[in-house]
Amino acid sequence: MTSVDRSAFITGITGQDGAYLAQLLLAKGYKVYGLSPRRSNSDINLARLEWLGIARDVELLDGDMTDLSSLIRALQTANPTEVYNLAAQSFVKTSWDQPLLTGQVTGLGAANLLEAVRLIKPDARFYQASTSEMYGLIQEPMQSETTPFYPRSPYAVAKLYAHWLTVNYRESFGLFACSGILFNHESPLRGLEFVTRKVTDGVARIKLGLAKELRLGNIDAKRDWGHARDYVEAMWLMLQQETADDFVIATGRTTTVRDMCKIAFEAAGLAIDEHLVIDPAFFRPAEVEVLLGNPSKAHQKLGWEATTSLETMIREMYEADLARLRQLNH
Image (cartoon, rainbow, N blue to C red):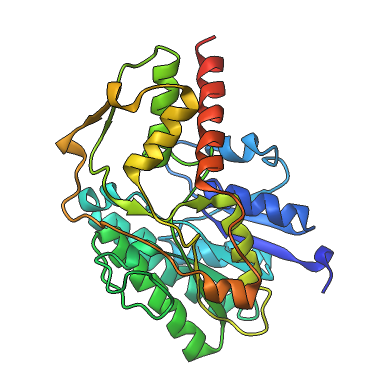
């Protein structure tokens, strides 16, 4: 099959991962379709696609993860060779406030899409965006594909349902369906509600005199952070294999939120102790203290490894936020 014959259908295309994945697939010659949910407002947030300069290169199809009939119609129109399910209510904190919505979109939404693929396009290759949050209260110091899961939020529980359903459809119906268990991955396109972007945006605001302090919760939590641009390549590689399988995608390095903050403050030439404030309001009901992924299987079978260091990524995010804020306040 040539690249001209390839087409991809991406849910969550307007998010961080969806935008970078669309960019990657377009560069490889794919025809790219994206799912576009509509509510009362007809405006779709294309900011990330526009930032990458590809908003006009993708075709958006109306549909919603909670509406099976719309997913069926979208697949009939796109007729994709590859389907990437990146759509989710993906903010952990919000999942405690909206657990039912999180379950319907993040969990049952994946079930709807798998069922639509089974009925309409069973020969398409399917990718499910799983998450390191499923490990939660970690059962092993370094988490691999065989580490037991122990989710610690409604979001992680919903993702675990979607993950196991993907395995089930692979084994029950013979679908080429894989899950990428992605550890934290960030970029200048990350939402402001996520801690890395909250930090780089906050530091940029302090640098420009728009704020005096940065308020955070548990800064001793440890995460394995990589760059989304690297991680979407792993998604694509999974769907190019002879057999479907699940893979941990990570850097194999864990860093505290505190040390991540230091990188951002150092990039700005600011003293962290003068601006960082710990606020109990930002602590979670159940915290995931440490996540550290073992990407050896992905390295061996996919030939994939992270190429962007945390330091490089945080500096890139800080510089992008600085440029954005300067333009807004010019």
